[in-house]
Image 1 (cartoon, rainbow over the protein chains, first blue to last red):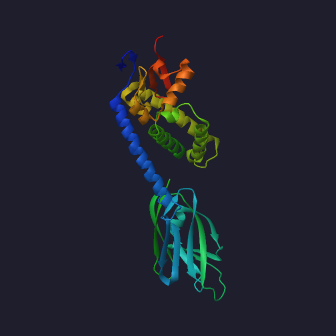
Image 2 (image 1 turned 180 degrees about the vertical axis):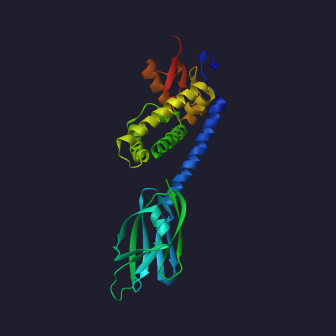
Image 3 (image 1 turned 60 degrees about the vertical axis):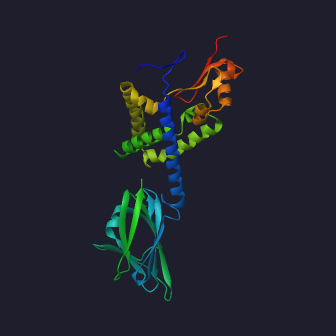
Length: 163
Length: 148
């Protein structure tokens, strides 16, 4: 490609190209600002917009992260009535993630076709049991799973996993 | 396969990000710019290998990045139009002692930067001794002095 000339200087200058490049930079800065703003409010994970709470039948309450990062743990907190210390989670979902830890440890885990049941010890008279599942999601993109108390309709949880 | 895809994706994302940040970002580094590059390399480390500490993964990342660099240089050579989008173009900031202030503002270069380049490169003292000051693709400023 033939090099241009400005006065005595042979130079491949193109002011129209530079103007386009500067516009690209300005658009890029706006995109970066939007991404950072989205991150601050939690749309990219771990923030106010990411924290979700769903309630279900029988006094079930599920706290989760709407936006998770692949290969990085997040907490699924399930609150169940003290007189019904058991819950079920989609078996398909559990097969797709890495379950790092369950706190408190369940006294029994029963695998079913539809859901895996976790049963816990509880003291008589306790109002509510909070169970924390430390999960690493490995499959990218949108997904849905269910949590329910045995015999009750499920809570559906939607989540997006970023790479 | 995942390692190669990660490295490729990160290579092109970083290419876009650094093009977006303008030529000056890649020029002579201040201490802070140097620290920033160290932070960036640390931030990308896990993303490149995907928590795989094996020798295989490390070699794959290196080979992928070098391979992409070589491929891009072939493409730029074959298609010069692509080269200007990947590397940018030089732009004259000072012509015959007079500053193109709008170009300098857009390029985030001020007179002090030009005078510093003139002193370092040519031992010049004033702007009026400069025939051309060019902001190069690399982000550096080259100076052509006026004949004495």
